[in-house]
Length: 226
Image 1 (tube, rainbow, N blue to C red):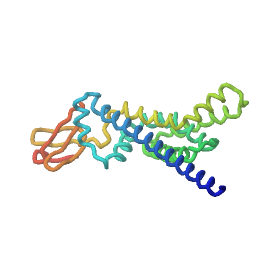
Image 2: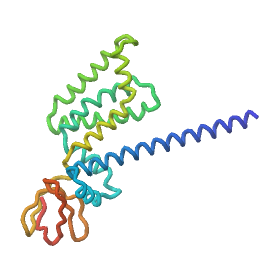
Image 3: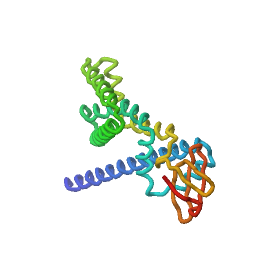
Image 4: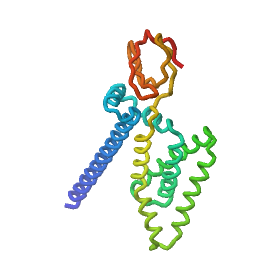
């Protein structure tokens, strides 16, 4: 009887773990789809037909390039959002005790890497100072009595830091209109086009111009790209 109960408990535990993994994967997929949809509309200036044409250039292997290219396209907005998001991520990884602490710690480490890269690349020395100041504010608030209203509000924020990070990423997706690829000057037989080459297919290039127009260029019309 004891062995049977133990087996049932083990099966129930395994089933619960699979359910949590499934729910987690569904959440990630939903957030990823929302990010992709917002990016396509943002770079298309929220024009439906242009957004449709841009979406046809994306493939399954473009996911990482789209995410990292979007974060790097507007470094000032990324820096400002880091100031808001990174301190609570660090605080949650240091003081948190929830089941998602390991994931929060990974996000905090990634955020620190991005902070370091932005600081050294663009000489944004105010970025780590501002981030540290916000973190120290969390630290001082945490020293208040447990029933203090401000401390309880901050604790609520830290408990939802994962949601905050996701929303910050969606803000970047929605408001950064620069595409996720470098800007190029394309010399053609008809003149010079300044824009972003979204994809290169046999015989033609798909280009989004600076004024958010989708253009298809034949390869034999392109003289140079720089």
